[in-house]
Image (cartoon, rainbow, N blue to C red):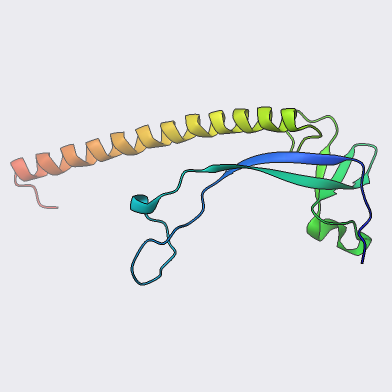
Length: 133
């Protein structure tokens, strides 16, 4: 079966970390001792259908009965999109997404560290004054 060719494609970059062998028992789980570096992966999506307001995109070929199950809708005018018509726009979007994600994660890390500091201070105070827990 030959799949129809589409002239327009869309792109999205993502960082992927693949699991590696982490123990002698063959468990392929995450282990910091065996952590691999992330790889930057470029996903390519085909144009399935164009509408006045956007595009239906997806991997593989277009099948009308599977449009919503295997396709994503991308706006023509939105500032943030799932995928972009050029690799340059997709890379720029990945950089912006990742910078925002790092900012959010740093804030979450600070909240956790501060909460832990408060908990240890409370624990120390309770021990000093013999307060029951």
